[in-house]
Image 1 (cartoon, rainbow, N blue to C red):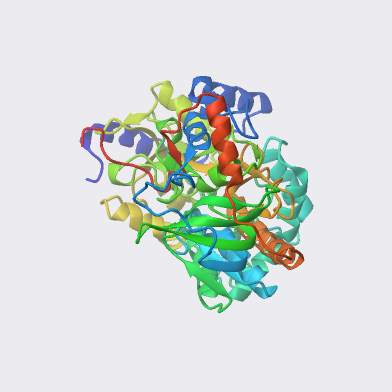
Image 2: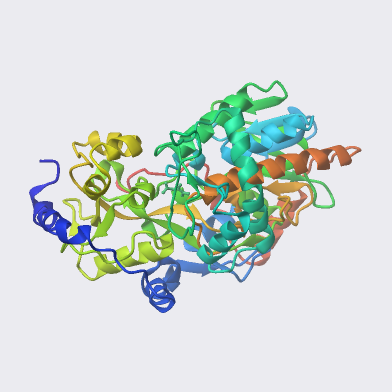
Length: 543
Ligand code: MEZ
């Protein structure tokens, strides 16, 4: 028996209700019901977990307390006038690298940007915190959207994206996302990405939450890993791209006019700074799930600590939608070893139902993520959930229903990564349901960008999850993998063009940091807390 006895009674109710649920489609929620769910149960509405920023371009805006702490902190740089640190001050006068385009971040957006900038003849350097490809792109499972079927179009995709984002999305960015999508997908295939195909060779596509057409392209349930593998291989094969791993950026460099001129990196192996002089800089550092907003577990990779937001903010970049995060409805709630890890939405796309502790469905499984997550939280707060031996609450995701509806072997064929992930802990998801609860998955907001990834800071571009506006207040499944490729490519092209236009000497300075420190002092803010965090601290309080 793979589930403890204390969870067994509820599992029996799930099994007993299957026959009834087979012919039952839970009705879609009305607009009013969705709004009530969000306002009543979505973590974005828990007022006292947010703080108003006190300094910087977004002063007065609300954001989760954990992010506010990062954004309002001092730099980790010892400071130009304070060379007492164990780490030597960076030598700004003699840069270690001089390039056209510096890309900070080695995930899907960073790699797509590097390939396009290299194609345009730019000298490129990627600096990445961990290894190339250690990124949320790698962790995305269920698919990538693109309107490339006869019954679909970028215009229909546009309406879905806007609806998912509560019509708050930045229209230009959505237009760019959906119009570039078919080409981006073809580009990935050309580079070698292997998407699932029908017997006639056409692309296999499925629905995701909030999609009105089947436009989710998949590589089983490891779509992100397949895309990342492809992009990473391509980057590694390019002579024009220099790669620095274990080298996160800790501060941007600016000239007297506030334009970006490079960055200071910290080599994590040598504990030494290096200085990169760059005509343009692209921030592609991804998300911030490892800040664990409101104490939520996360599906994010180990390095997702919001560095890019911090660096850009201190240099004067305006942020957008920093008061909204995405809680993926189905993070693993059991076993404890995989708490918060992603259980792909594809599980629901192909037929699994969400069932409470009493064996009843409580939400249409493919509502948008914010709505489904809120409904799960409601069930738990109302006592209709299961509690694990480690006091984690969750509801059931009834995976055996997939095989009942679509035939034996479907789970293994469509969800091989999920099968392995749970199989390691003795749970056969073709026969037993999974226990799930929302997990912190995506940063809906980030640095405000134009459709060419420009920011309000000259020569600073941003692409991927570190940017804000594309997805409004809620992203649809499969539009993040699309976002990193579409905007990564756009950023690479734009950065190479800007680099060509930028002539003359570059001043490598930290005037923005001096200014930041003055503002901190003027507002009475202490400088004990430093950012970017770089890596989460999981040291036990009593250790
Ligand atoms: O876009 C995503 O977040 C995604 C594909 C996740 C998933 O459920 O698989």
